[in-house]
Image (cartoon, rainbow, N blue to C red; front, side):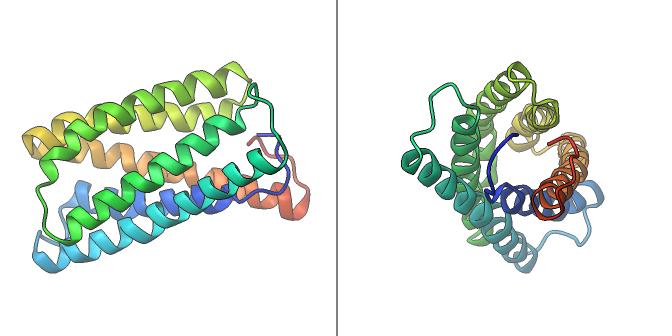
Length: 190
């Protein structure tokens, strides 16, 4: 993404951390489910992927508004995605923390599946393969989230967890690429 110094690494790192936390638990089922575990997962979901992505989205919207970024710029998709995914994690984190019924996440996943497909389309179309890969991985997360959440199937939960972990690794690469590009002048694909 050819952008000025913007906080995209913050959003990438926040989501990646959340995906490691949730994915690790989904794949291993360790520690075993409990009220205290749900509170812990809720806090991690609320702050890392929730707050950090939402903050990134707000800063991107401010940048778009202040600098009158044209509508043909992929930064618009980034702003929509970071903001929407951030709020989505606020809702999921709070739901998990307060012991809500997480089966409804399956219906939420339908909307975020569409957002992920649109993100992949936009970033591949503008030639940003690295972020296109991210949205492809997010698409796989939400495809697996629908049956995992609606059925509670341990197999589907593990599949979703595996996609969370794979995506988390890619997000850490994007975090590394963003930080080294902006801080050191490196030119890793971003």
